[in-house]
Amino acid sequence: MAVSGFEGFEKRLELHFSGDDPAAVKGLRRLDFFSLEKVLHAVQCSVVSAVGNKYFDSYVLSESSLFVYPTKIIIKTCGTTQLLKSVRPLVDHAITMGLTVCGCRYTRGSFIFPDAQPYPYTSFKDEVLYLEENLPSNLSCKKAAVMNSKSCYKWHVFTACDEERTLVMEDAHAEDLYTVEICMTELDRVQAKKFFRRFDDGRTGDSAGKEMTEVTGIQDVNCNALICDYAFDPCGYSMNGIDGNRYSTVHVTPEDGFSYASFECVGSVYDDREEFFEVLQKVVKIFRPAVLSVSTTCAAGDEVWRGVAKAIEPLGLRLRSRAADEFPNAGAVVFQSFAARRK
Image 1: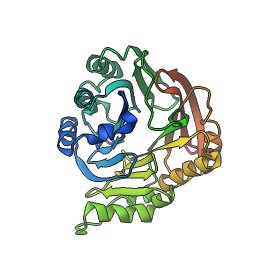
Image 2: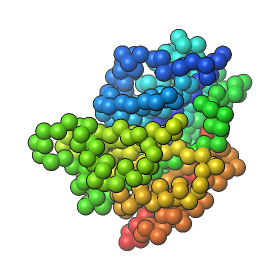
Image 3: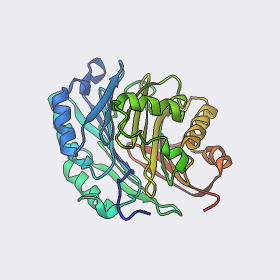
């Protein structure tokens, strides 16, 4: 492993808000671009591409992604970005729109280069303390946990919510949705090469990104999604997909020695489960990682995690460990780690 390189593992923050009648207005989508850019500047990233529909706005960032719904914001950033510096300004902006934060979820994997991270990302304990200091006191129901695995990578989860409020969801069936976060390291070198740009290609990041989306097969992961993609110079790739009120996102750091890719999507417990497993298999085939983890978050009682190992193991990976826990404002989180059979 390289002594130092770009940190692919993202930090992910999800904030939920409520108001008198947030479903009747655009809510957080009214936040002007200048204010949004100012928040991102504090995080140490910027917008490189964007697309939206009637449900939400999607932004590809210089370091990962941002999704803005009327009453929900999801932001994930990689590298040494200061993601948690977005909490207080986002909460303050929401107040001016008549919205109050009523839920928070923060997740991340284990950094490849932990010593390169600034405070408070030097330890999960410091991150939790920082969140508790910057979230309003009404979020009194809290839980933090580190979910272990047999690999060197762990899954860190913090949630907080207001016990006196009912989370306002984007639609009547939002509680039936689940989130899947896949983290992959030690990518196949041939596959990783596809995320390097040709020297002095004279192309924009958007056009080069579109080519990567097509050449790698990422466009086939969800054929119904409207894709907003971007290729960095000399290497690296990000993509946001929007499909109705659901998003998907891919981020790739292809350099040998610290290669990393992530895939995140939203599904419904009422979806065809076989289609979900097909998506998993497509993603694994695109990157062929030696180490992979899958974290599923869904309402307590649903077992969307079942069948994940059966879908992935035929592709040359074996289940190494599985951990499960329940969190307020999130439900059940199941963290499964896999490694190539050759390891």
